[in-house]
Image 1 (cartoon, helix red, strand yellow):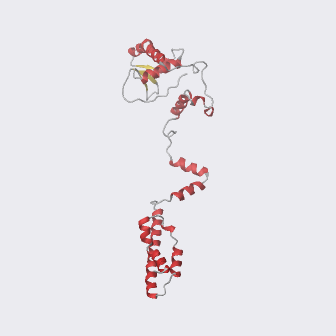
Image 2: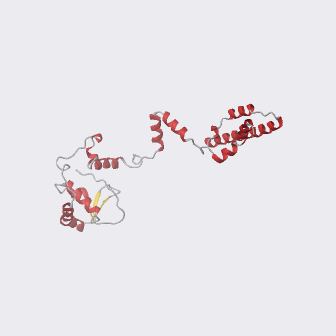
Length: 236
């Protein structure tokens, strides 16, 4: 077989190769294929016509595959990752940010949580480490003395919390089903420590802390059971 016949045979086998291997049909240069068919005419006109017709048929199949690829791409069924990366790379930062903001559901936002709850959450984060000491969050107003109290969470703290429950809180809960959190905590000079006692007692299931959905008031009660719920409680 001559080199011209081999060249034409390669063109004839292209659709089968494309079918087996797959890939982007536009990687095949149709114009170059037509040029090769024209350049590799055989001396035997009958044989040459046979090869040329088969090669042209193969080229038409490649063109058809290219058309199918374009239609699929327009329908959104095929997306070239490289094309997307390049488009994102060239996109202005502001426009990219706008698209992300428009099509991303935020973990936290005014649409999903009230302004008052966001304020309470920020106040809560401001009292915890390391957020409370991050300069980027700005200054946090604290009452002199009570927020700068040093509290060590050890075995002694647990014992103090249980002692506080037996001495001060248990009797209140026996008198009433619920105790207003703010009114109760205001009775103590070390309000921050008492707040941590209540948080600890709630965490181990000795008491429950809940919020009245109608008034927004925070209440302390005997253990209610059920699922845990995080409650941000401002005090001062």
